[in-house]
Amino acid sequence: SKKLIENGKYCLEILHDHGFEAFFVGGCVRDQLIGRDIKDIDIATNALPHEVKALFAITVDIGIEHGTVLVLVNDIPIEITTYRQEEEYLLHRRPASVHFVQNLSFDLMRRDFTMNAIAMSKNGDLIDPYKGEEDIKDLLIRAVGNPFERFSEDALRMLRGIRFTSTLGFELEETTMSAIRSNRCLLQHISVERITKELSSFFMGSYVKHGWKFLKESKIAECFPIPLDVIPPIIEQLSFASSIEGWSYLYQEHNEAGNVPIKFKFSKQEAKEYRILSTLLSVRKERVFRELDVFNQQLSHILFAERFATTHDEISWTERKRDIEEMYHHLPIKQSSELAVNGSDLLLWSERKPGPWMKNALRMLEEKVVSGVIENTKQAIKDEFLHEGTD
Ligand code: ATP
Ligand code: MG
Image: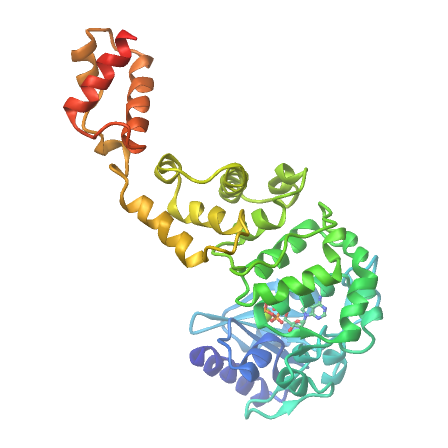
């Protein structure tokens, strides 16, 4: 974090030395004022993109048509964006074209929330025309200007606002919140990729339980690519170890839940995790987990389903977690390779030819060992096998 800021300051100096204005802006200023770790550095300047490029040895044109040049300083990427104004908004999305301006105040005006519309000089002085610092102190997310207009210009801002409730633990200021509720269905103009990205960060936020209240009250989920009229309740232990856990919890009751990975364009890996978690949730709603479930599935997946499929609060989560962990601990075997017999034993005992039957028989014996029907010893398994075979 410190190293990031040092390198950012170096960029500001270079720009100043060549007669340009330059400030830290956006998330890095906000997070510094909050006291959170800074993820990346954004700089705003009146230098034009080609002027920025001329000043730094290594640059990448990541969004040059929007005025953004990525500069690498000591291998650290820093985004330098020319002051700009966004004029026309097409179909409730951010404009395809922007125009560059010489005045910082226009650049701050286009930003979404007051906490994100603060500029900071190299010496730490703030340019804060919308009183973002005060809102940060009050833990408030407030739109810059008229929230109804701002969300109508760019509907993604609403979801960013909801996402910040979860990542920062802030409240949405009242008018900003009611503008989200009124404009929620403009979200339909936003691409699925961007919605997925925001929601995934929402699920991973440290304050997701707090954020869930705003997700619910804004009713914005009614306008998701797979619409949700009712969202699952805020439970005691609402927090997710992966964004996919969040997706599985959100869509558990939905009859189109199976389409979630396709609709939201999950990666193969994510889709796989989603299917496992959703299945475990529905299994857990039918019955309690047994040894065999704990043997077959990753412990973290079992614990997820244990936590989210049930709401019975008589037994505390800590106790239920401990019970599952104990069940795992006491499994006679933790993986197939620990079974006391193998295929050759079966061949010897049965005097049959090798074939697919062996795999099935091993699987059946393994299940009996795991669920405690027989002991994991050669003798016990042999007895069971020969007994089953003569049935
Ligand atoms: P994060 O911590 O997620 O990076 P951030 O606020 O830095 O949060 P970015 O997407 O990196 O978010 O955007 C950088 C800045 O650009 C924001 O702080 C905000 O000032 C501005 N911004 C981003 N998206 C929008 C938008 N849709 N409308 C208006 N301003 C935006
Ligand atoms: Mg950022």
